[in-house]
Amino acid sequence: MDITQWYAVALGALAVSSIVFCLFWFIIRVARTYATFYFLKHVFYPQVHKYLRGSGKTTRFDVILIIGFLMGNTLCVTIGVRNTSCLIKRTGLMSIINLMPLALGSHMNLVVNRCGLGPESYGRMHRWLGRVAIIEGFVHSTVAATSQKPDLHDSTQVAALIAVSAMAAILVSSSAIIRRHFYEVFLKLHLVLAIVVIPATWRHLSSRKLWVPPTIYLLVAACLTVSVRVLRLAYILYRNLRYKRPISRARVESWPDALIVHVKISRPWKFRAGQFVYLCIPGLGYSGFAQSHPFAVSWWYRDRNGNDFIVFIIQSGKGFTRNLLLHSNHNLGERIEMRTNIEGPYGKDLQLGSYSTVLLFATGVGIAGQLPYVKELLNGYYNCKVVTRKITLFWEIDSERGYALTHFKEKNR
Image (tube, rainbow, N blue to C red):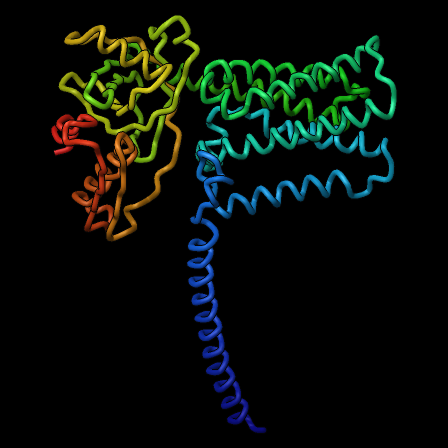
């Protein structure tokens, strides 16, 4: 072939390859679009039956992750185990490995928040890690006790008994009935028992070499436990203490079906929709200093004196919220402020500004989580920062007087 024929072949090959590439890219885009659609529709969003999920919101995707986690632990415990001695070592090692992520605690913190986990997802992950770690610990201690006679004069075996007893107490106290009726007791008892498990397990280990498993795993768990709590304390101090500024204070207003809590904060931040904070008011009873509960930030504003406020809409129930209601009724007509500690903000924005039409649904005090999105979308619309052109809010309430409706209208004109 002469040069002109080579040129024609090259030109034809270029045209064909371009067509094949465009066709291939089109197929990938279509497949990805449909795969994403069916994944979200049939796996990610649908919830399992209420008898399986309980009071939480467990989706099919969550179930798949849980099954994968259980299968992974089962394989790690069984593969390569040839005798009872290997089973004892493997179950004990796996239980300690699962203690490392558990050391982050059940409370939301900066580490978990940076990982993009919400409180419900993190709580579910923490519960299943704890259940598996406790079961593996039970198997470890049961097999060891049946294979050889326990010696209570041996400090390492006594430590093992203490660790297993603490795990059993954690499992029993974590039941839904106890958590529902004795939530504050459960939280404090859970923390104490979790702290007991680590030194007891450390004493039980036969090896004292720090850089050899399983000692290194337990050392990591202990360091995580201390570091996370020191980080939380530093975050609380940073958020509530500021030079030449008063400490954060809260004012409670009682309405027919809800409580409106205004918190004057010492150190403001860039408020975003989807954020929540932990609220602690030491003046609410003898145990108020030890109670910290999460609430969604409903809206925020700055008064004429330049003070920044965040506002919560809270439904009165038992415990902490009941004490809030009693305090507001006792000081009816008075503008009494109470010293307040806040921890946060946590949570992430859903980035609803990329949608042209947004539908929001709320029932009762659930409006507290939707108001920030309405405000943020409206501000973005007026500043030409979002593509949203229509916002529809469906709010179901018992009556027009309920949930501080008048207050809501005045603050969100």
